[in-house]
Each structure stands twice: as C-alpha cells, then as structure tokens.
Length: 444
Image (cartoon, rainbow, N blue to C red; front, side, top):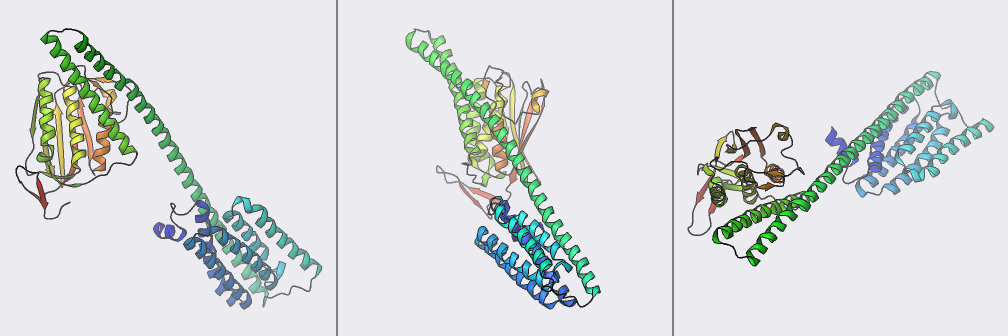
C-alpha cells in the first residue's frame, strides 16, 4: 500500500512536499466525491450528483496536470477557480443554508490552506470567505432565490449526517497526511543535520591528521636527507638513516594513500567492480610485499589460503583492505612475534582471519576502532599511525557486500575477520608468463 500510495502522489526526489500534498488531497477529494455522487442520486438530488461528477472530473484533470506534467501552479489555479464556481452552484442547487453547503465551504477552505503556496493565501482564502458571505447575504435579502431541493425531511437529515461523516473523514485524512509528511521531513532534516555534523567533525579530524601526521614525517625526511648530504657519516650511521628514511616514507605513503582513497570514497568517486577472484592469486603480490616488511621487523608472517577459494570482490579494494589490516598487525607486534593469515568458507561466505600475538587493543579504544580519531597511535617500533586505515577498511569491505569485525585481548594479540561472498563455481587457467585468465560457469 505504501508503494502504491507513493506512486500515486509522486516520489520524493521528483516532487516537492507541496506537490505531494496536492496530489494526496486530490486523491482524497476524488474518493470522497466518488462516494457522494451515488449517494446524492439515491436521496433524490440528481442535479447535485451531476454537479459533483463535474467537480470529480475537474479534480482528476488538475491531478493529472500536476502529477504527470509537473505543472503544479496551473493545476492549483484550475482547481481553485472551478472549485469556487462549483461551490456557488452547489449552494444554489442544494437548498442554500438549509443544506450542508457551509460545511462544504469550510472543507474547501481547509483544502485551500493545505494545497496552495503561502504566497497565494492572500488570493484564494479571502475569495473563499467572500463568496460564502456574499451567498449568505444574497439569500438573506432575496429569500425566494433559493428553493428547498430535498424531497422530504428524512433525506435532508440523511444528507447532513452523511455529509458530516464524509467531510470529517476527508479532513482527518488530509491533516493526517500533512502531519505525517511534516514528521518525515523533520526526521529527514534531523538526519541530514546529524550527518552534516558528523561530516564536519570528520573533516576537522582529517585536516588535523594531515596537519600533524603529514608535516612531521616530511620534516623528518628533510632532516635525514640534510644529514646524508652535508655530513660525512660512517656506513652504519648511513644505513640506519636510510632505514629510517624508508620507514618514514613508507608510513607516510600508506597514510597519504589511505587519505586519498577515503576522500574519494566519501565523494562518491569509487567505482566498485565485483568479479570472481581466486583469493590466493589476488593477494599474492600484496602478501609477498608484507612478508618482506615483516621480516625487516623480525616478525614471522605466515599465510594459509587454499587455492580453491574464490571470492566475489574488487581486486584493488581487497588488496588495500588486507594490506592495511596486516600492516596494523605488524605495527603492533613486537620483534620475534607472529602474524598469520588464513581463510575459510562456510554458507556461501569466505572469512579471512588475520591474527597476531602483539599488544592487543585496549578495551577503551575497541568501541571506536572503526571511526576516525585524532589520537596518534604508535606501534611497538615507534611506527606512527593516523587512525584512518581501519575506517577505510570498513568502508571498502561494506562496499563489496561484506563485513569486518575483530576480537582482541590486551597483551595477547588481536584477530581481524574479513567476510566476503564466496564464489564456488569459478575455475582458473594460467597463461604463463602473461596475466591470469579467469573464467566461470556463471561469474558472480
């Protein structure tokens, strides 16, 4: 019913709130007129039934013009002009003050308040009141102008009772819809305000990260280069400085890459290209690089991934996620420690587990681990982190239709789990030394 109703009044992206209210009022009025036409005919008021049929057609045309041709202003003008003319005719043909016309005029006033723009209130609302007062005055000064059109008192009382019920129902539905639309707009505005506040906070944190964590390593790199350029150093000192340069540039490059990737994702510029990937083959180059980085810190990196495991993923995103998580594991593990990477499949899902026996995550930091933080983190080898990598990982994993979580015990280590869709139907052939050729009975 909600889907049908939204189609009748128009989707939110295509129509403003005023247009959707106008369409809903038109539908409600047409429904009420549709009930009134046969009723008035049965109680002996065929002319009034015919008049209401004409009004029904006019409202339908106004609805059509606005809903399907998006000419709301023209539809409102046509609706109001014909509405006032028909109210005058209804007053004359339905016994004047002895009929329910006053209540119908009041309903017309409420409808006008509901559908017309505020800048047109000065036109249509005084017109409604003026027409009603002029009709009352004319009937009072010309009592023979209006005749009683009811066949008997029973029909008159029935018409009053029925008109009251229909008018009350129409007013209820109109006001209920307006209240509902108002609350929806308020919730949307509150949601957008919350998102804007979160976006501003994130922007401020990101600028803080760039201001501090990018400037400092670049200054260090400059200092190391000046030492190498202007001072005579022995081989040991030179090698130590070169190692420091490599570490600083590697950390800075990773941080800058994460910032750029995250910014691109927030701007909607990331295109996700999901395809069947053999997991071990897709991660092979990344794992070899990570193995050499871990060896520099004297950390053992082991991975156990079955060649038969295929996943549905974006190759670049998958590599970035795994690289960030494993780099974190290396960063927070002491020399002599161990990082293991494994993959299992179950119920159409593939879960990649990245475990370390490092320092673990403090309990107070676990709840906000996947949110941007201005607090700088340091690894066991004084490696500096900007706190953006895991935010990016969560974003990219979810874009691939998966999810990421972790478990950790301070002092014992952490395990991160990356869950993606499994592609069991895929097969693989190799064309050495060229690129991998992927095929699948039905690529997912």
